[in-house]
Length: 272
Image 1 (cartoon, rainbow, N blue to C red):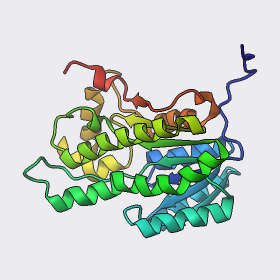
Image 2: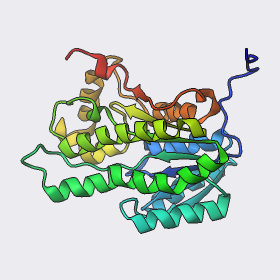
Image 3: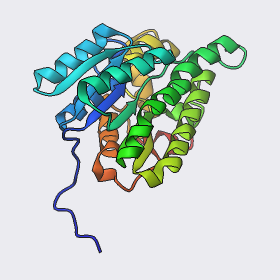
């Protein structure tokens, strides 16, 4: 029988964590930005990767202001050459990547008749294909070292219909969840874990840009409408999702792989 640990091993001390999508689509804290800061607070060296240098630099600056370790890496996760380059730059700066947080995602409102093949290809390239190239950069080294962790960010839109058509986003997020599980099962015997976090309705800067018009013209009304949808009576925060991700990347989750952790305030469990 193994001895009981003296404390919960919720730490990422000295581990190199690469966050794809570490910026924010607007002022405030996205899931990616909150995750970057959380990882740094747990002792990680954080690779803040984003296509928007200014937004990534803002995240990096916030981490450094707290005494944490972070560096910005700029590239488009829809472009294979960019992904290969920024992972190489990160490894040169910090050393081998110990953990990957794959946070990128785009969408387009609309059902089958409003979604073109070009729309689906573009969204698939960011939401799904980018994980293939990113995983190819980190999995060989993780398997060789016998240690590594991957967390991907899906959505409850990949589990159920949320009341408005969001076909390309939902389909690709469903694919991302299964993609993660397949990685987990193939690499489970080589010390590499992969899990998917499934956020529900989260109050992030994205609401102001892409969600508000689905409910009301006023952003406060949109937030209130989304709050009412959730059994807990409120949307989640980016920090609550980030904390779930940190748990899964840490040794506290050493026996957890190939699963989906739903962070949604009970949304997917309600009957209507």
